[in-house]
Image (tube, rainbow, N blue to C red; front, side, top):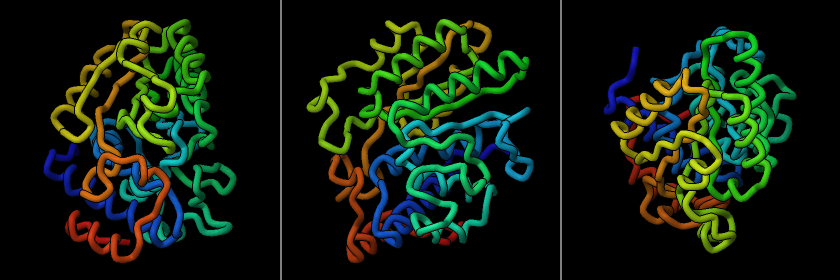
Length: 283
């Protein structure tokens, strides 16, 4: 049953709590982009994707597939996989520990349910997603492939090679998303490579582009509705979700400084207080 916007807000708040507690327990990780993408990924996993965690297999037959191209955003990824039932929530405490299933970048070596593709070498995930989407087309499956990219990651040439491939093969079952928060590890994205207007670029590459507020659940739902309605057009979709790095915590919001930095204990306490507790409870 679909979640209401209020229920999604509660879940995404808990996901942000998970993100912060995971990186602080591990003393490493990438909280900033995980927090900026938490709302629309919560909507994706709870309301938009057709998936049954208990029946998960890596071949993805008969189910929608999600591939995270910006592979460093495992805190949000693992939280959502746990919160939707792929593995026990308690396992989040093992994040980035030696030999565990929850590595800093998603890995398929230990068979963590929900992980279709190892990723983290920036730019490669969209290529993998196009391959999966083409496979589903050839198998005549009526499922979508979703992929999350970063705007800093979009400086990688392989992103655009995958973009051309998807258009050439008419992959209208592919819905890519960009966490368009304007920040990357070295600073504002425009100060690093001057990537410019991503909407114009993706349109020039032949994609259908939808722009949405990545922190407004009405806007998020409308974007997914439009993206799914595009199926049959022969054109892949890119949803550009306008978002804020570190969203939800005042001292983390809007700055690249929390791309890969971890709050100190007193900062964690402040952040969790700002977010507030939820009925879902911490791991």
